[in-house]
Amino acid sequence: MRMEIVFFLISCLLLFTNHHHLLCPVEAAQNSEYPYSFMTTDAEKAAARTYDYIIVGGGAAGCPLAATLSQNYTVLVLERGGSPYGNPVTADNKVFYKVFGNASDYPYELEGFVTEDGVQTARGRVLGGGTSVNAGFYSRASLQYIRNMGWDEKIVNESYEWVEKSNAFKPDKLFVWSSAVRDGLLEAGVLPYNGYTLNNLEGTKISATIFDNNGKRHTAADLLQHANPDNIIVLLNATASRILFDSSSGKLKATGVEFTGTNGKSYQVSTNKSTNLSEVILSAGPIGSPQLLLLSGIGPSDELEKLNIAVHLDLKLVGKRVQDPPRATVIIESPKPLEFGNIQIVGIIDNSNIYIEPTSYFTEINATHNEYYGVIFSKVAYPLSTGELKLRSKDPRDVPSVRYNYYSNPSDLKECMLGVKTLTRISMTSSLQKFAFNVSGNSKMLQYSGSALPQNPSDNDALAKFCKDTRSSIWHFHGGCQIDLVIDKMHHVKGVDSLRVVDNSIFKDSPGTNPQATTMMLGRYMGLHILKERIGN
Image 1 (cartoon, rainbow, N blue to C red):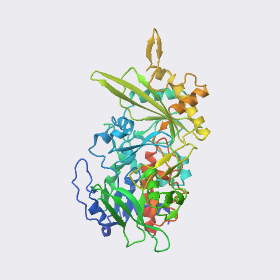
Image 2: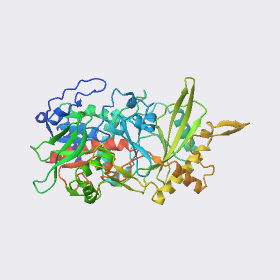
Image 3: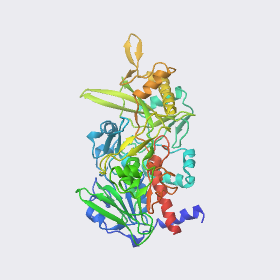
Image 4: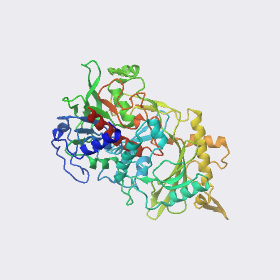
């Protein structure tokens, strides 16, 4: 059957409700915090049923995946966090800087942790995942990336468009700092100027954001508006502790999930036993998905045995080859007012792995005085350095030990130095010198908060030092359940029936300038492919 015909049939099926799978609704009062009737914290009722699909994680991939599968099949989403709705911390574009800068102050939205490299980072702990707390930039992966992943280009494009109808917005104007850095990039030779485009193109461009032009955030949870409300339950504050298996057929098969509810009680929920096509799908992200496989006894046997975890499958590469593209950052104090500005533009340097993006913010010193800061950072998009994730304990609430080995491959440091050299050139342009302070007479200088950029863009020692001194996470970590290593092309965990992984833990490289667009696309894309498989069966 031709691909076009198959997906046409799926589109037709999505117009109808499969009444054989209708769920009795879980009672949940619809209000600003719970806008969907199927959102609940009632673990008792949620666990009393069986489901065609149990999805662990309601993040950037899990929400669109659940919405798609629910059109014809029953779905339970287990989300360890709460609702992003009715919450000023997740709602508007003026708050994200405070959240990521002070993760410990926002425990209901974000979980901060320190890598074994000593780098402070964080992951979302709320429905919508990172899309509920991030800087909002929306840009597609390159065509080459899509081809390298072996994805169907037509369905990828349709899946991006499905996401973008409700979650991607063209800025109606640029922030002051975004406009200045855009012009500085062009002056520094990051050409051509591509204007507004969602595509990944070398040069300088404006792209979309998940903040609308009223400053309201639209998270992956918004994609649940497309779900069939009769076929889905989204259980909040539910922490998965292990996957349940059956091996009576001679092969390991996932049959459910054990989790802890908001009341601290442990529950077990099962997939639908009337069909062999029911599945558990991990969408808990590049920390949560490999962690849950390890907690469930799937991973390197020697590591599991040290924690007295029963080994179900010795899958050596679970938690391996994790990456976090390193970031070098400059913060420039501004003598003129700047907005809280989320990311709107990017410079993609040709023949390199460098992406350059700006943001801005201000701090209130007192009732009459603010201090304004413009930020520019350079990301090494495709690092060669890799690390690993290991369990610290058998407690699913403990963040695993993660080491990314930033700059352990010398090529990554060389790429970073190229990015910092470009930052230095941007700082010397007339567009950026407008933000210099008067220091004496007619002399003007940029004022830095933190490390100053090297004065000489040809001083390699100074460039390398700046990379190391400002080394930080851009929160785009991935891997741990890599495609071809831990999962196959259709995302089945190798050696296990009825278990898949669909999130950015499967990526070999971070997609595009910022991964959220492609991660949301992936949820929709894999949902359509799973529906296609069921038509074939």
